[in-house]
Length: 247
Image 1 (spheres, rainbow, N blue to C red):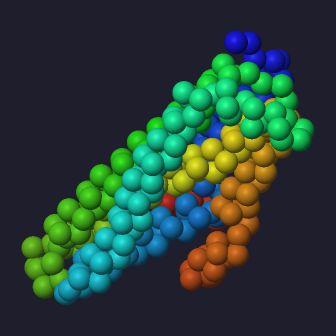
Image 2 (cartoon, rainbow, N blue to C red):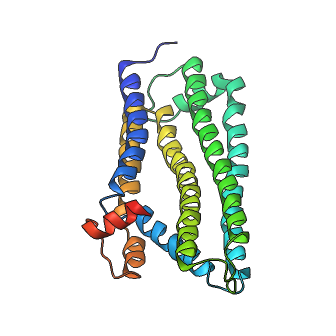
């Protein structure tokens, strides 16, 4: 099997854009209002309120709903992975189907198997991200159970604040892992276009990046979330950036 130069370049572009965007989003969140930034602040507020509430039944129910959603994606990923691996034994039939479609580049059973293996790796990556997120949400459950009680006098306000920030940090990391798993699904959709043509694969990757960027930094839901703290999309103010880094 030999991939064309266009195939190699497009695949290299896909991998570099995926992991490059992940690093870009992580760094940019420190200086620009984003979904990651505002959700972290809201999680801190949630955990701070938790330490000053007498009952935590509603909080446990909310966290349970989040865990169920992540568990659904983890179990669904296994089914998707099984579906991706099944055609490996009948790559010749897949080639015939692809060749019957318009604008499909020349392919071969070996190329199809190679591409299916790459697609399987994407979903394996997503599965590990989802399962790690589930474990971390479990850690948050433990922290919620160990939170300072409302009527307890053994904890100072400073201790309650520290606990809230650290619990929110674990909560935030769980959210990031869940987001990374979802992001793998987005890129898997772009990867599917490679079965048709590397040029279409390139364009679909650009579209996915554009969608992810817009939702993270320009979406209406971001504006609504920021509005809860009287903020607007744009650069983070210096004092808020410093506070975020110390939390």
